[in-house]
Each structure stands twice: as C-alpha cells, then as structure tokens.
Length: 340
Figure: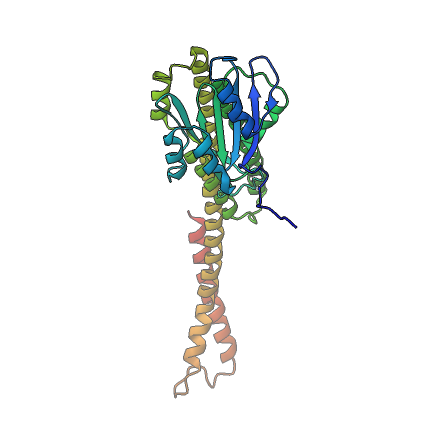
C-alpha cells in the first residue's frame, strides 16, 4: 500500500489554493503547474490585466523548495521567511512588495500563543501567500475569492486581506469587551471569585496583538511615498485607507488595555481592603485577649504572696478586673478605628 507523504491539506507542492483572476470576472481555480504554464504563456503581454494568487502551506516540506525553484520570487522574500522579526510591515524590495502580516489561528482560543505569521509576495501579476498554521484572515479572503468577489489587481487583493484582518480584530475586540463587561458586573455585585489572572491573560493577549499587528510606520510611509511603478494611484490610496482602518482597531485595543488595567487595580484594592479588615479583626482579638492572658500568667506563678489567694471573693474580683480592662481596651480600639 502506498501511503505517500503527508500533504497537510495541500497538494504535492504545498499549494493550498490557487486562483486566476481577471477584473470583473469570477476567480478560476488553478494549481501550481497551471500557474507556471500560464506565466510562461502569458509572458508576451497577452491578457495583461489577469493575475494569479497562490496560497502555500510552509509546513509542507516541498512548499519552500518549489517556491525557490519555480516561483520566481524575490530573494528578499526568502530572507524574510528566515528572519526572526515578526512585526507587521509592508516593504518594497526592488519592484515587488514584501509583507509580513501576523494573524490569529483559525481555532483561536484567546491565548497569547494563538498567533502566527503570514508572508506575502506581491508583484503586478502574482501574489503569493505562505503560512505555517491555519489563519483566520487569509481563510476569509479565500472564501471571498471563491465566492466571486471582483478584484482589480494584486494590490487590491492585499488590501482586501488587510481589511479581513481588521474584521477579525474587531471580532476579537468585541469578544474581549463582552468578557470584561461580565467581570466588571461581578465586581460591582461584590463577587471577588474572579481572579486577577483572568484579566491578566486578556491584557497580555491585547498587548501581544497590538505589538505584533501594528504596522511599522516607517516601512509603510516609505512604501506609500515611493510605490512600485506598476502600482496605480488608486491602489496606493486604498492601501492607505486600509492601514488607517487597521489603526482604528488597534486604538480600540489600547483603550481595552487601559480598562483592564483599571479593573485589575480595582480588584487589587478590594483584596487589600478585605485583608486589612481581616488583619484589624485579628488585632482586636489579640488586644482583647491580652488582659486575661497577662493576669492569668501573673496569678499562676507558684510563688508566695499571690494577692487575693485567701480572699473569699478573690475570683470574682479578678474576673471583674479582667472584664473592666478588656472593655476599656475594646472601647479604645474601636474608637480609634472609627475616628479615621
């Protein structure tokens, strides 16, 4: 029986999906071999408005090798694949665009580790995306392309990807807001069973999302000021608008971080108040028990001259003395507690 090599949801080249797109027409599915044949056959300028999108799974062993041998991509793209810097950015390398886009996993579970990177190579006729984990935004883009959304160029395809990513972030912000609302309601109801760790996880998630997803202003500014020659002015404007919408979502995430910080401080204040109240009760009990312990220790010494030893009402006198001292100490303690 021929088991074959695992494909991880892709074909033998690591290609997850491929589409041939023309302005105003529905996308036509295409595989890696057909994409290469189309690129060679279309090299004479026929059908100049058409372009191809190829989406690869880098967990497949053959994907990166096929891209290097057959893809005709920029060397900068492969250097970016090996780069440890994961911050979101869009840069120009010669006459192509190289984008590093961080996205959440398809099965996102609100954990800071549920983030992964999507690498993008864009030129006038080809857009290549590659990832190691299933990601939400690019899956939404694939569904939209498969559904027949009209696309004009590869830059519009990239811009649509960024808008899909912003939509995913909006969903995350709404979910986090709902969780924070529940925690805040519990705090207002006086329930302290909500641990600060829950708020800490949400805050770390938002911080990591904001740090990784915020586009680098310098690289984006350089790109928008000096775009490749094949980029239309309309594409530049729409890319600028997409990044501005993305920035709005990131500002909302920053506001959520401040709200979580205030809730953490409120929880800490309530915990400190409870601890102070418990410490006060313990202190009062210790103070009230001091007279009886002191007198019992003095009267329990086996030495001569113990006062009231032969007095018929000595026990009652000692009890009265202890009660009087305890009452005075209690009055002083509660009085000082009420004064502040």
